[in-house]
Length: 574
Image 1 (cartoon, rainbow, N blue to C red):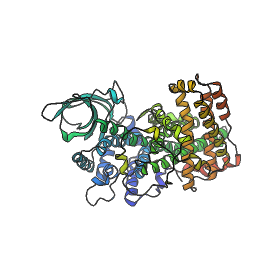
Image 2: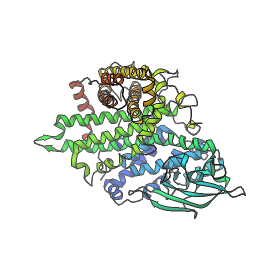
Image 3: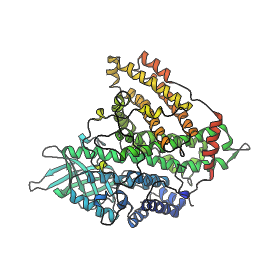
Image 4: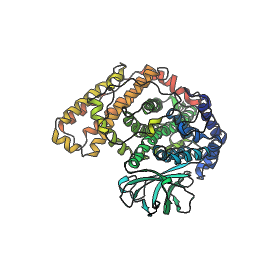
């Protein structure tokens, strides 16, 4: 089964040391149990027990230290995106806050590993080995993540040293981080700069926790904090690139958090619904309930298959292959918004049960909303991927085929991504290769929708006046981007399925494209209704609206073979 089941953890392609890390992590949470997990959540208890476990097992050290900086004899220490996916999924499966301290440590490490300061890299490796956590001091209260407007300052003293002044806002781990990678500007020439500060130093004021949950998301202020060259991570364009490239690495993990949350919620919802009897019938015998649960299952499997395939492109990336810059933000925005949809579908089944204090679902329904809004909103990431639309559809490149990238190796390029420009020049392999390999009924319908969308794009470019106005209409572009990302989403689903037919059968892929066809039709109707859409565009939008091919026998097979068996598949230790 492709979905995580901690009671039957059978990871594919993990080396023994990595598998042991995941099994020990599962063991930590199962030993803690759901009652204690919920109690700590309700009382907003700082997760010191989890961090002590991480320290004793040296988990962050093993997973987040590039192999170049590993201590001698530690062959299993590396930054390996594939195995990090497992850890992200497992921690979020139990509760988002445990994932969050891992996530913001990843962000805090980004500017360090991407910088040129070798001494601080070796120091960081030692701190990780000691069980320390890290933080990413980027956003500010008045400006959010608007890098241009940052007010954090680094002023020269005249003796080669500097002092830092300013505040940062919404900084995870800001209460305990050994090092906080802090973004600012120099006062002498206005250059961007990244420097490292310690959260326990006297010049570092921990102002408050900005949120009312277990996590500590800090506001902090620096008061004449002394900085030497030993603390400088990067300057100028390198600092700017480090900020954006760190987010490139970190935002991918948000999709895995959604996958973990939804998987646990699905098990709980299935168990509740299958045991509940209303009007003399089990809830799971009602046709509309079966539809809701099957839809939730198919969307969740699609989330995971897309994220796994996107991992291959991240791991295979290079200066000449930057396709990950499309798929990566899609894991952040598409997978996380699909996660919200999965929870909505499950909630429609379990209804008031989803509010009950002793359920995991009550946590899931709250936390799933956070993920589309972290590391850049859905809107910001959609505006990014729209830059790739022209080359994706009309100027494909030629690339060697990328297989599954699960080998235990360090992902060096993630910390050498280079300049964050030239996005409009990035090419992609022809999406029609994947779509041409499948002739299932709903994939065929979806291919027709894609062809009309291509007509839409060509016709839109043929009306220069309307195109110029719509290029400034963010609302229009966001909906058009939804249609674009559905095409890329389906492409990677098919690519994954072609490599793993045992995980995604013909029936399952066809049922997944049932919701893909419906979603495409929904966004086509939305684009039709935009104030700036032209009559020609409106006509093409109506042609994009299609009904998926229904097959009651296929649906019944998915229900009986995939969905209903989940009813007793997993329950967390009390």
